[in-house]
Image 1: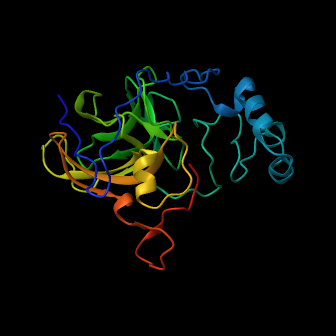
Image 2 (image 1 turned 180 degrees about the vertical axis):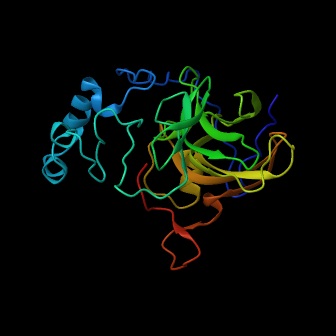
Length: 271
């Protein structure tokens, strides 16, 4: 089982017990999926949804999808009908190399040839993305993931319930959950020296850390929503055993009304 996270930082008093019931996370938005080999620009439902989401200014600048999907390649828009893409925004002269893509809420990861738009490898995982994925030197992937059926106490955009590593065949090599009453992963991590296959090294992950309003006021905070508390940034260093071997908390680097470039004003932001 994953090891427990470290206790709250010294400057914060013990966190209150979590609420008796946690809200259920929203279900992933439904939408028409792409069939294998289907181009984004030829899927009428997806094109219509994308056009509806564009502002008038963006429409005027880029033209409609129908206008640019007429057999020509336009930078930053859809490619010609029938091209082998997965809906990439592509310039006329792309740099050689590969793109690693894990769309929001998707359980799939694609390694795409940037020059042609062809999918050269793919992974299917059990969970939606948590907004970040990296290709390790040995061909494994490490990604933030979000279990939409899991309850959570920290409601933050871009949140993730755990971080996992998979080999090229899609077999799970590592997983670590960080979705507690006081901590939740979000948005990004740094792979650093982490190697799940060799079981060496560590990675650094961003996490939201929840202070109670009592703790926040103790640090000089004047405004706080009693139901939500105050979220501050934390960085967790995690090894291949799932242990947190080092942590950093912004709540240890705040000030109230001070003029110190090395500290963050506790009354900036909302919450």
